[in-house]
Length: 170
Image (cartoon, rainbow, N blue to C red):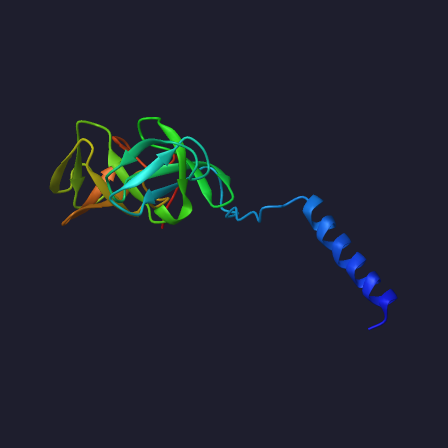
């Protein structure tokens, strides 16, 4: 290869390398496009809440309750800023969250009924801090059908956290 062409190629390669060093690095955003705020649930029995969106940020809390409802209040890349039912906030990686809907009982107890009617047969009393799954919260009534373990029934929309006022799940 002639010397002039070799010199040109070396110069071209050197400029390409130097040019890429000064180029800004842009992180690929992977925000979900889902509405904010929204409710999600913890995927496992051990989830670290961090002070910022990344592994380099310190752990501020360790949740040890699978399916605990969390409210997503912000997103950054693959990290979700969440709030729990007591108001604690921090960052969790998206892989540790589920889209399924759950509630946590905030009242001393709630009553599950066989139908969306206080005159219906009572199925169970559910205690404070118990986590259950939302089956449906129809537009036609101000009740939700919930499942707590083997017990499934209807409860008025009060005494539990994990669904917004006026939100319907059908």
